[in-house]
Length: 321
Image (tube, rainbow, N blue to C red; front, top):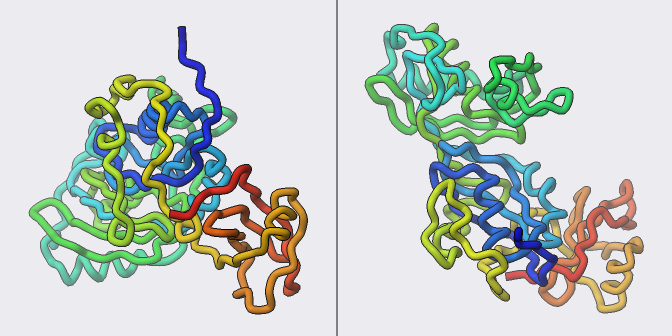
């Protein structure tokens, strides 16, 4: 008989270092099985090939997922030239092969090319992506041989740094907006150089205000009571009782200005009432509301006034770590 998960008292954000070979959903399912909490979600998909920072929200903190996803992200990627694939990464079948760019080992040229790509532009998502069109996932349609016709989407490349060059690859660090596909960038970079290219390695080093440098990430295997094996998320025991997890500070993760409120105001916040913000509140569209080291809510300011209305109220609050 299937285990039936029920809400727990857990509420917070986990910064997990996702291993290669697991989908983001695998990670979410592992945390569900580990905690017994059904309300678990991630803030930004990582492909199975990718490793690195994956923010996972547990319990009522899942209400903050969309705000965590909205921030910029930083990746370290290896783009390999000479071959374009169906999936735009090393796991796909070859679509076409080309000669390597003649000056692939020229670091000055590589730096110049990357700098020229910085800015806002329209990007065509990979054929194998989680984008939905008319209720169908693109990757599911592609697997049946009936690939969807996806439309380019506005994205922004905020920064691009060359880390290294090899005989047939460039290692790059990219700072990107929400919705940016590194696989698409690799594919398009090959075309810019009159060649072909695909992604062979990817690691997310930062998401919004959380980064591997400033926030030690949790190895998913250390959370599980049994060894963690990619694609074998059923190894963790369902409903394992956990009262503490290495949650990160939600205020820092969100990055919005925070104000401390009184007990009376805290009760008003729990009831979803508007707040009058202190005159010293920094100008911001969204404000984190805190009481005694607990995150209560996100409030949205009204014009230039000091009045703010509830955007997200967390049942039971989220302790700050």
